[in-house]
Length: 99
Figure 1: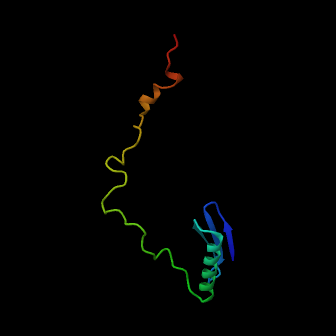
Figure 2: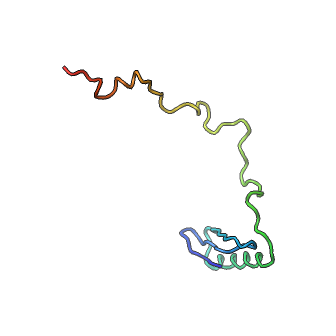
Figure 3: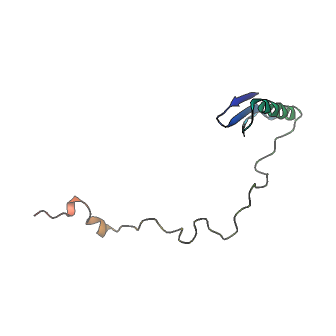
């Protein structure tokens, strides 16, 4: 239905079999290739084919091992120690002694 130029390639806009608006960006292709892809998508739509569902697609990269942590050891520590009220009172202009 539409081929839009983006900074990195082309974006295709179309309506699927159920009438929902769809768009997909293809990087690093020329306008002729984008028009060819659009025609393929529209032909598949007219035949009643559904596009592949991303939720049922297998992951493109292997998942992390079970039990491994992303942050590593000490990842749950707070970056700065919490300041208690007694130590925070010593900071600021009210605690300064006027002589």
